[in-house]
Structure formats: structure tokens, C-alpha cells
Image (tube, rainbow, N blue to C red; front, side):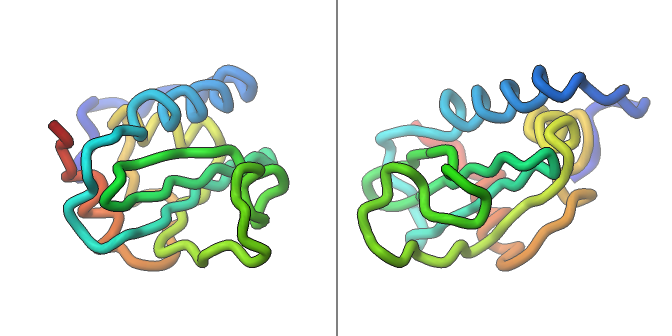
Length: 126
């Protein structure tokens, strides 16, 4: 995916970027529209110490902030959380800029299934 902008955007202030990642995930990455693929879990890790998780299933997509990076979300009820299928790591500024297509998501540290990330980026729920 190529960035939409021909110039490199400057980094955002830390708190603005952290709030921006969370707002993006909770407003634009949640829906009751069914995820049309196998259920999946995507995690987002900001190097500033905050992490989030997206669950994708036939029930739609939901998001939560992880209470401690790498641990189950506060709303998880299982003793052992499901493993993530993919994870994305970068500074909060890098994450939010990639979410808004100002930089390439694929320039960040990616682990796990790139196919799941490609499906998620391409998904247009109705």
C-alpha cells in the first residue's frame, strides 16, 4: 500500500497519537457487520507502552485496550487469551498515521499473518 501523501508527515505528540489510535480503533474498527473470513485477532502495540486488540468474527469486530501489553483485555473472560493472528508495532504516532493512510502500515513491525492484515485493510463492512 502506498501512502496517500507525497511527503512524510511529522510525528504527532505522544498523548495526541495515543488518543488517536484508540479513537480510530473504537470508532472505525468496530462494527456489528459480520467479518466475512475466518475469525481473527489483531493486536496493536505502541512503543510508548499501550496495546489494543481487535477481535474479528461473524458477530462483527470489537476492540479493547489491553490492561497490560501482551495480556488479555480487561473484558476477556478466558484464563488464557486467544493468540493473535497478526500484530502491528510502532510508536503511537506511526500507528495512527498508518491508520489514516498517511504512511504505509507495512512500514511498521508486523508479526503473524500478513494475509489477515490484508483482509482487514480491504474489508468494507456494509
